[in-house]
Amino acid sequence: MFSLTAKTALVTGAATGLGQAIAAALAEAGAAVAVSDKPGASLAETMALCASRGPAGMEVEMDVRDLRQISEGVAAVESRWGAVDILVNNARINRPMPGIDVDRENWDDHFNTNVRGGFFCARAVAPNMIRRGFGRIVFISSQSGLVGIPGQPVYCASKGAIVNLVRSLGVEWAKWGITVNSVAPTFVETNLTRKRLQDSAFRSFVLGKIPRGRLATPEEVASAVVYLASNEASMVNCANLPVDGGWTAW
Ligand SMILES: NC(=O)c1ccc[n+]([C@@H]2O[C@H](COP(=O)([O-])OP(=O)(O)OC[C@H]3O[C@@H](n4cnc5c(N)ncnc54)[C@H](O)[C@@H]3O)[C@@H](O)[C@H]2O)c1
Image (tube, rainbow, N blue to C red; front, side, top):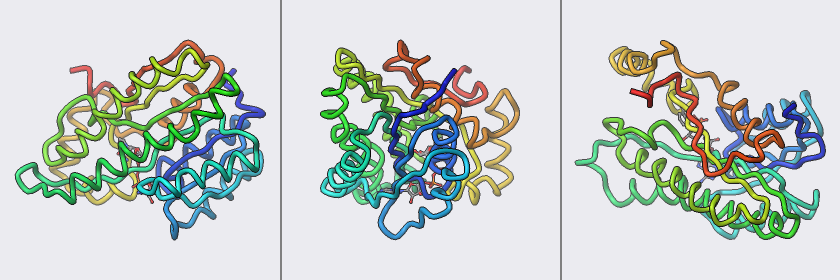
């Protein structure tokens, strides 16, 4: 079960953190994985990890704020492998700022990366998926798309937008064999969260909200993505799958 042999995948924001773990898990399940990130980000570690677990991958430089880079990146994967079967929209920024301080730049940065970037990556892979009658698109949303978290209203809004974008695209594209879903992790220790989680008051707040009593691991998030990308999830569409130890249930 959950084999992705002979499938191709494209993962955005794959240089570090969850993107790296997701790329490695897809490779381990048998997919050839195109790992992408902003120009200048090193993808060597992720490439090596994928190669040690599964088929050879490829690197794609792609800043998801730049629509031209998105179409060129997707075209590069399609010309090498013929298709992108699985797209994982993982790239994001999170620059926490209380609502009262938010400026236009903070708003635009979040929405241009997290929402617009993900949408146009999906838009770019869709025509070929439609032609082939198969596609799996998985966004990484967040528990922050389901509940409000103090100090990061714009990030929460951007992740909430993803939850409903997934529903809408999934409804439109299901007739072409494409499923569109998202995975909503709770806090995972990665480059961007590590510093905040060192603050003991913030860490206690977070752990107090998670009935499982601990943070999620990158591998737990990656497993949910592999499931949604698999044939076994063929009837799962428009869903937002929490990997949050129960945070959003109460
Ligand atoms: N870490 C957590 O606690 C947590 C919780 C819930 C959801 N998430 C979500 O999981 C995903 C990964 O989070 P992470 O913690 O690994 O983040 P991270 O910051 O460690 O990694 C994000 C990656 O995205 C890349 N990126 C940023 N802007 C980009 C752009 N414009 N174009 C291309 N790539 C870009 C970065 O270079 C980086 O490699 C995100 O969508 C995030 O919102 C994370």
